[in-house]
Length: 155
Image (cartoon, rainbow, N blue to C red):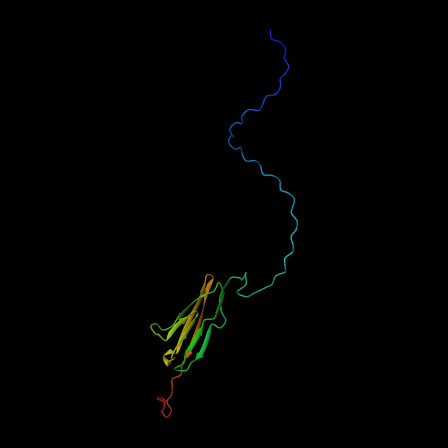
């Protein structure tokens, strides 16, 4: 036969701490707190349509004057400009007589030196960007020199 429960003794000193176990599962996200304070209002800014603004709209190349007639004098130098406006900027290519060192492309321009009557005709430029392309034609006329005192033939 067993006797009754006796009086509990004093609690003993704590024992050694055991090893940490593996991390537990991730808990549920907490509730969102109240909204923060409203910040200061910024300035009104400026409206800009310039090509250097931060928010320029994309545009297909545009040439204001697609056909231009020009009369040049023999011996002079001229610079032809494609004049395309677009964003992103257009890449310009020129169609001109090949293997003629008097024709040089400088940036978006075509420079023709020592103009001759044989330069009469058409010179074309094409402006292209990712949105499309457009063309410009220069119709060049170079009158031949008439020597004073000489009678023109076939009059």
